[in-house]
Image 1 (cartoon, one colour):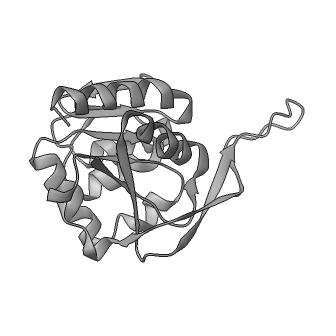
Image 2 (cartoon, one colour):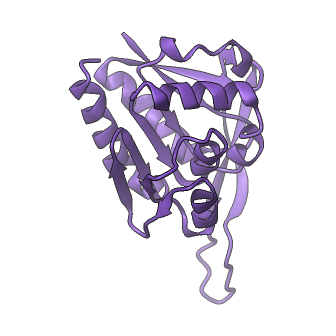
Length: 189
């Protein structure tokens, strides 16, 4: 069974993460959850409160479920993975500073392996220096992060550029995962 790397940290977005976590094994991929340390992490739920009487421009964050990372970033070896799925939430803002995570993501990208990225996950791709010259999408508030990484931000739901598929947020989970799995299968994994 081919392994897919899924980096997380505290405040990983629940919907971004759990859809892929459960969907990938349906096609016989083993999801390997990695974190700064091998331990239990807190996910969060982000949404704009649906009260039209009280405008709210940013997402509200509430506690979500827990998810265990089985491996620490320092122990990652890119050759062990057929690809990577990078979810959003606030976690990418913090874990993007981990040099072992960035090294592994960069090596996966350099090897031409598929990478799927949702929402704030673009911050990790920027930190890993692997989106220069690529067309990507993300939530509009992360467009600058994509551009700082040398990518061209495109205001679309999903963008495919080579072996990279990016989506705005969890609303695009289905189509992002469909394309990611298609890429993996096209590589024979």
